[in-house]
Image 1 (spheres, helix red, strand yellow):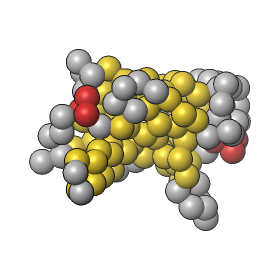
Image 2 (image 1 turned 180 degrees about the vertical axis):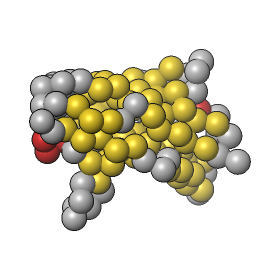
Image 3 (image 1 turned 180 degrees about the horizontal axis):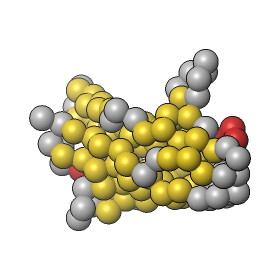
Image 4 (image 1 turned 30 degrees about the horizontal axis):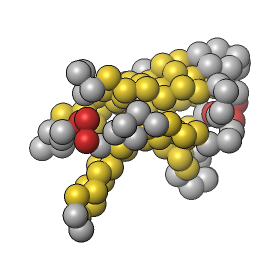
Amino acid sequence: QVQLVESGGGLVQPGGSLRLSCAASGITFRLYAMGWYRQAPGKQRELVAVITSGGSTDYADSVKGRFTISRDNAKNTMYLQMNSLKAEDTAVYYCNANARQLFTTYDHWGQGTQVTVST
């Protein structure tokens, strides 16, 4: 059974920092591209950052220079370090694991963790 469990969300003031974690089980973690997505109220889910199985990273323009995605294959865990947080970063953050093998795509989601940036 595949499980992706996010943690580390919460309430933080503008300019503050949080580190999200995504612990994976039931998959061969090192073979998966991992990503963080977020969904704010009334908006579509959007990609925040992605890290490939090889360690390459990419970010949404809105978070470049503020957020850092990383992974620890030994711990089957992905992280998102979020600095200089803004009110517009408020959203539910979701962990995603994605892999393709031949003609099959494997795509898994976590339940999400709330991040609220407010005074």
